[in-house]
Length: 118
Image (tube, rainbow, N blue to C red; front, top):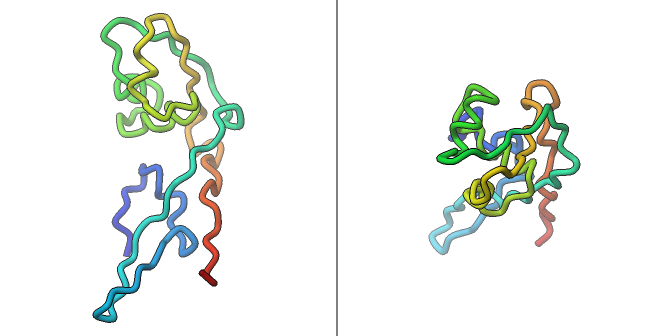
């Protein structure tokens, strides 16, 4: 059973290698999502750029670019942003807009494989 929405940044890694398991004292095993490593922005194909304007919000840029406000993380990834809100701090900054996932297959498997022996 998956609890991720199809547009989630974690949905692309919805496989057993991206699931951690934590045994509990009572014998249960708690499953959790492993950390997602950010891709390098230079490796992400883009379709263009957007210039940051006064009052701009990343979710609005995502909606204009992808038709989905929850795809703002794609813009953050393409611009190597650990703190997405920082992308909007400088007026006039040019933000790379990545190709939509359906056209590129991106993001690729960017979560390293978990070593099952540990």
